[in-house]
Length: 265
Image (tube, rainbow, N blue to C red):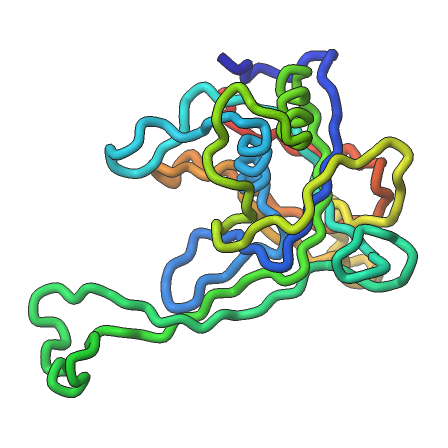
């Protein structure tokens, strides 16, 4: 049984960095265009960290939607993206090359299952092919270089270290780590060692109260929404907030960057 109460004073902090050429973090939209969040969502980070630690989050399978277990760990994470790298597939910080993720679009065919006599008149025109195909577009992130600090109880922190070391886990891990879509695997995943430094862009909560409608301070950073917890049974328990980016240093997460993930209550 994992504790869901506030973290104890003995909690530990571990830093991870990860990279992937492609990633996707869907928001709650449907239709012919499926967008992605601009950065790694906290709900996706939570699933990634549980996978690394070998913690099974799926409840009973084969009985409708795949729900999550009621007893799962909760902890705090601080998320960022690397600001500059020396090479495309490196975490060095020597050259002034921005690596904030960009976006691209995939074009796909959407195959639907008509009900009744819908579009039956098209069958002769398709010469034996499927007669109910529509074009669809899927947005994805390109060149994601993420930073994640985890503030958790010692037991979970140790499981993360064991999972990253390649040592056998007490519980068999489900699948492999991925970023929002199991078509997009991680390219790099490693612990941030003490003493490492470099510029990053922290994801911090948007301070709405600080917005000055009448001041002449110019436009601030653009807020964006990220999910913190995704309710798989219904939308009423899904949690999300608005965030902005803030320039900072690798090993100095600002207080406003810490977000509690996992079940609440």
